[in-house]
Image (cartoon, rainbow, N blue to C red; front, side, top):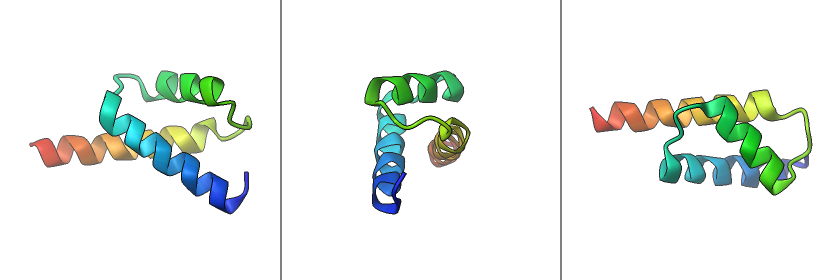
Length: 62
């Protein structure tokens, strides 16, 4: 994934996380990768992005 495209994917995933607030980050990323046809091999990194964003959401709500 190119640098620009990679950042766009991460930002999009962060926005989707804020909107949907998934219960299972791995399942959410798996569906996201399938739906938007993201190149394979990035699931683990994208899962970490979702987990980090969920942590930020939960800490700001408390």
